[in-house]
Length: 416
Image (tube, rainbow, N blue to C red; front, side, top):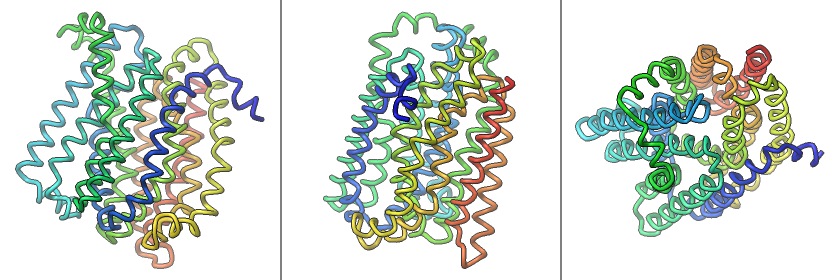
């Protein structure tokens, strides 16, 4: 079985990414038992709201031109897409910063978390760092610079963990959590930007206004269909968290910790496989082997993830109070609930780019809008049933959605 799981030529590329990401995730995971004793569940509730706001906006800040970079037909298109991504991000960040500086408390009240008001300006900074890192990471993916990406993941994870610990030791809560989260997601963008300026100056010289306009027209489907799709996707994850934070503040903090711990295999393997898949999908499509390639990836991901996820579901409830402190027992129970959802997400998310490679952007958009409605509706309905609760409804809807997602992706790549 081990030989079957590791026989593909893509393993070398995945290994480069995973090797760096493992180091970064280990740093964060090792720091977390100390972090949970320096910050309260209420501090984590504010972090959950902050991460939800940044994540929701950042995923669409580049108008999704960034995901087309590794799929572009030629290098001229790719570099114009990179510039379009960064220009779009700058416009979105300017708008958010204006709102954050003029109406911070109004926006905080609107999302149901008045405590986040003084930190709204950090949302703009977080979006800028996260979105620019995403665009630059896709450029590095196109150029197969997986080692460089891995190094940035180690660096930004270490920086984020050190910030959380340092600020927490000084008693600067929740600022340390917010800054640490921001740096752990986007600090690597500075390194990737420096590499672009050092290695890709010749590519940047071909960028012109006419080229930007032509590329915008050629890849407009990403902005038209993929932007609403991405917003619906991340909103389906983050809006329920905002709802839970408004209903029961500490519960959102418990959920955030549980999701951070369970996200470790997603980050370690899923994101790395997804980047390698994106860099090879166009070639597999031309060769007529995209369906076989996609199905093989999904099988391997499921087999790799099923044992760790099952172990997490069984061991988290008794271990969380010991590892993270007595205040975090509820987070261990939540891990058991979200484990099936995380296993299915690990299986299908890395190959979701197959919908874009085969021109099914409209299908992807409709699917994510349905997922948003399903999750929000499930949380609202479960909140009215005391025996279930909003977190449990959220977990069940996630598993249902990703099971449907897997079937749709396989259908799309079978008949592109």
